[in-house]
Image (cartoon, rainbow, N blue to C red; front, side, top):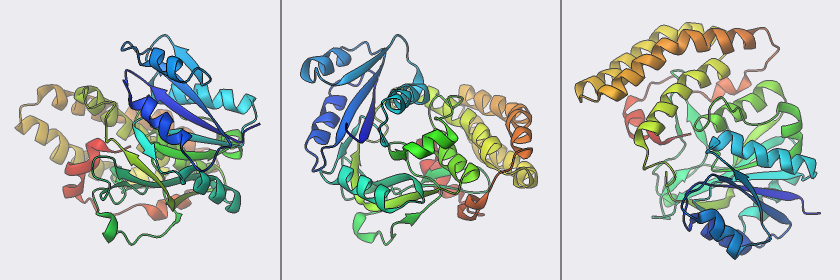
Length: 330
């Protein structure tokens, strides 16, 4: 029995999933199985995978179930078959031949690590970093850590962090058994950040970044054709994530600055540029915030949680960074 299950999602991805599988099969580590979840692709990509790799298990959805539900289907499959480790991997990544070996090695050595992520470079320019984890500030903005930094200028060492990208996330079996699956409320975006925060909130486990596990990411390849869908999900999930991950005292303290921030920098920008659909979306989800607050924050306030991960949050607004990367993270 293999100890690692690698989960790939496929949705009208042409050759991307095939290329990802090919890079995985060239790994120095071999104790893994691959499962593909196809979200009702219409471009023949599922049939291509079946033709080229007939031994790979494929879950065939009849509709686009989204990132969270599709991954959860595969995770449930893996739990039943008693895999020890689960790797969520974007199908638009190519992996270094030692990525799997290094992830599993670190997972075995670090008993306190419940989730582990690696160093993600851009596929188009491998000397530039895409992510070494996820950062967030007290205003709820989240971004890929070290985004756009040349590799030679990176001084960051491996260690615990707030969160790692769901594009390449190793999850231990104990983590799934303790905190459950990805939150399907999100559909896509912010789910990785919430999951990592939930781990630290509900358990004594940590989230770890290791620099020896390297992958190469074709940035936003799966959603760049749907800019409004992506914007809407990011906007909605921004408020949901805060309601789920911020302690009540912090959320109450920053509610007015957060609302001001969204109006001053997000809604005003959409209004100024005449992006009425985006402006209306911004206002709609801002008005939904009280609903998310009462639905999620109040519920969490009655539970015994640890908010030790708050130490990773930034107090600065850093708006100049948000304008560049906020719409592309999580």
